[in-house]
Length: 637
Image (cartoon, rainbow, N blue to C red; front, side, top):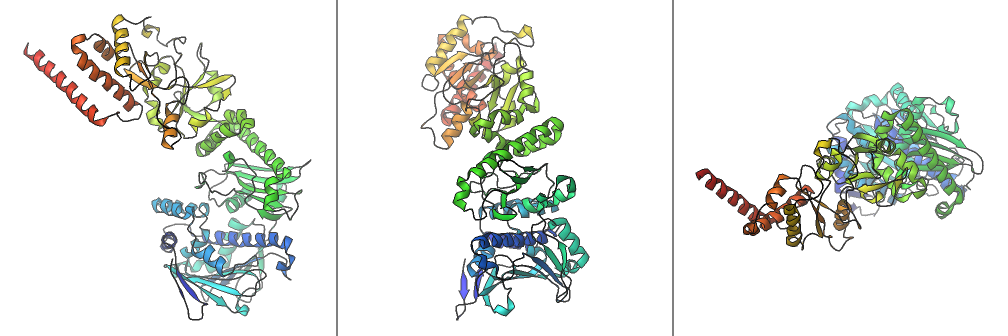
């Protein structure tokens, strides 16, 4: 960023950082069909400023001065084609304006730009609230934005101004031109945005989008006119559930969550007893963008007797981080510090209570409306499964709520799985990997399909971790189909006529021994397989240690010094194996090439590359040459 300061050292012109400049260009040349979002975003910012003042005034009442009632006002100036959103909240100083409005280059900004550029339809507008870049939405309807602000308790005031074309200025403002406290945002509307000076249109937008923010909103029809209160600032969560309509819940959800969809689940309850609190919680329909950001802020707002305290309280376990909403406690002190919040036994009890309530409501929904619950799982399943790994006390509940793609279908519950166990089946089998389509085609599944044994297909990165944490469901342990012996011999095949004969022929036994000797530097063992029916070979992990997929993940992040030697399993009934086993000592060189080609074939089927690409190419050429030579000789007989 570059800046230019005038000779008095007061006015300052700055250039937006690259990502913000791109974002502004997108807003100025917006392709979004619904531009009404800008007003909701500005009102939301104003409400946050009022709530932050109310919190800071607990320890410093002088900040409120004579104006104690929080207020947001929206003034229409149709003649000058201007719209002003003003609040009497905490306000901003010079550095606040530069940091908050000029240099927002947080990780979400770049992600927003990438996703918004990819969005070809008007639906892209829904990204704005999710990515925390709502202020910039003002440039969808304005060719210039002026922000005048005075920090509560400060004398000096400042103006931030930009046309959205790459630069902004920050200048001092005379006290008489600034609000006594708070922020005034003035939009110089573009010609095609003059509709936003229509009182009826604005009133409808405010009621629909922001009618339930916890700060009163007044509309002023023209400069000098009397304010008309449009929203009274009553906290929705304090009202009885029976008095709140579905549309009111939806509007509040959009306001508090920054989402544009409807909530997939609404949980509103009041707890009384040892801890008294009210919670209004929402499970979104669509996945917020930042669920896997390491520095993602928690998304529940904490209030104490309707006074906003923080949005960074640890009120939910990480596996429920997609939940949005508010929690209002009647027991916490208003002057609770951030450190006290982290150590508060009251907060710990509230966290336990709302966690249990959300899981309980999800269980009810799963039993009542499987399709609706399935959509929640599709959006947030990977987060849920983190709880199997790190929430031991809730593990059984989360396992019961989990849904899986399996060889028998999609969104199968473990209860469904256990109800379909085959004769002599004692484990819940799973196959972990990166790609669901590749998993379905894996040779490791052949023996299980031949017996009608269902296998969970786990393609989320977290899957390889939670299955190793020792969980079981209804007494059945989880077992990887790529690790150890398959233990399928005791389970009869669906087609009894395809059951392999007992014992191996002498030739196959000798060939397995030959493979073990030839490949001893690359595999830990070579053995006959009962998990293969159509493929000649596959690789499996040893009985102890990580399975094949977990080992790949740990190697990728440097948690293992090196890969372990896998076990090569061989299908003794496969025609290729039978033909190779029948070769004599004269074909030893060819058999050695074939042995290493079989191993590379298994590696490719497992999603890996051949161990040595150059040698693989040379061996393939020798094998093809031998085949062609024999074909030519045979054709001349």
